[in-house]
Length: 330
Image (cartoon, rainbow, N blue to C red; front, side, top):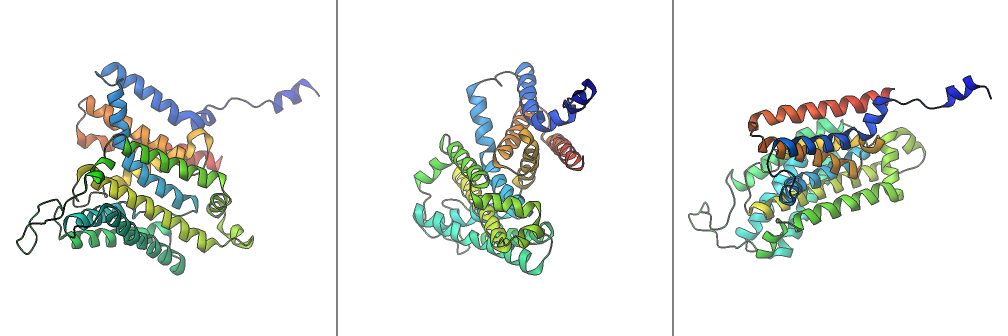
């Protein structure tokens, strides 16, 4: 073989390919170095724990979004589902005096109906996932607001009847929202979803459907069934995220899950390119959450105004999307 032919076969270094695979991880390292140099106490174990605690709930919710993205969907109702779950679980304890198991179990059961409704509307009416779940996002948020009458649900609150709520939030429930349990729950769920999507036939089928739905249908896959499963998993993880919000703050705040939607979306899309995956994946989503968490925590320590942080998050998401979609087309 001639030298010229060998030169043609030898792969050339591509900066864009390198950044596509390792850009997110390199950005995390660079941010750690920058914030470590320009802030006090950033490179400490307490800062690490604070960042992991801060991103735990967002990561759980974003991991559910990742599953819906795997089948080519897009569940925008995850934030509202988390708000609804937060309202239901706290109200079951405070208003109705339910035990820990009953409160969590009923909350999960009720919120799984969110996934069923999303899947039914998307599959049967053949409306684009993002548009339909945008509509259901407002519906579920309205249900949560109506259920709580727009008020914060907490122990010893005054009920509409004028009496005080007598139910108590179980002490064990409060422990779930503190480290290390909140962080452990997040990591376990991320690992489980990663193993499911990458090492089971059902996960691989979901990726096939997301890659080419028509080809998956022609090959005999029950596409509607897998899309239903994806939305159920998305609703389940959003519900767990909402329950964890309640465990962390021990109240049901109005619209508590809504602010987490955009961070979850950003984490999931940033995760597309981690290690060159090129597809929604749980470990990439975790890396995206870590990146956003480090950014937020570091900017706070540098006294950057809170109202400017969305600019930075939006810029990071725009850059991640630009690299991902440019790579897909080239």
